[in-house]
Length: 121
Image (cartoon, rainbow, N blue to C red; front, side, top):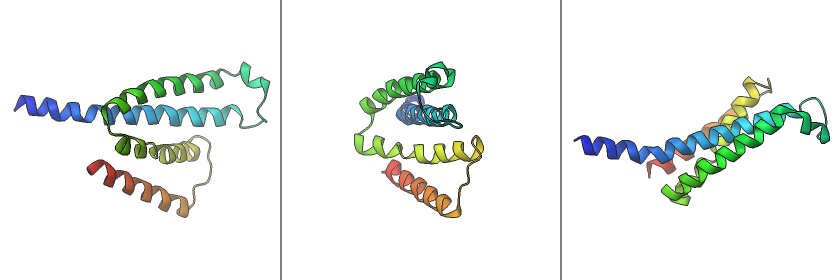
């Protein structure tokens, strides 16, 4: 019994790491938007700590993603990346106070439905 519980938990580790990778990538996207929010991109970004933080998050996210790719089939792992759309939309709405329409919400719900279908196999 204990073996099956640990096997069941270990089967979800790649999914948890995929979510963490996607979450970090989403934070990086919102951070990049914050770094250019009130001005055009340019060399001034090299003086913005948030700019460097965003790329560090991308780096950690990429390393986690490599582990995920080593454990999950690509046809399962890659569609999970669409969670970025949902998390970035949430970040845009909550952090940047951007408007999310009902059409966008409907699209995000469809994405969630697709992910659920893929993960359930």
